[in-house]
Length: 80
Ligand SMILES: [Cu+2]
Image 1: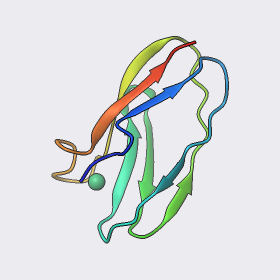
Image 2: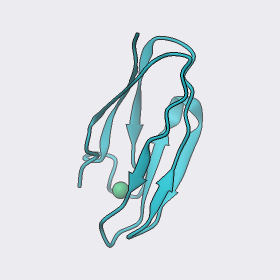
Image 3: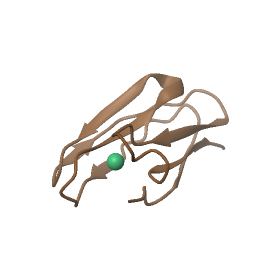
């Protein structure tokens, strides 16, 4: 299990609306722990998320389902 793409790049101050698609048969989440954001991604479902990151930096993204966070992880990068 992975998070493709593992690197999500956004521009600070601009809203982005990634579409989160779970094509598998297991439930997942899309979490940014530092922002206290967690979106449930049930099996075979799609979720739409809107994010606005206000400063340049990078944060962990991961799936919080038990046993998933070792492989389902990535980075949210805010850069101009
Ligand atoms: Cu998962």
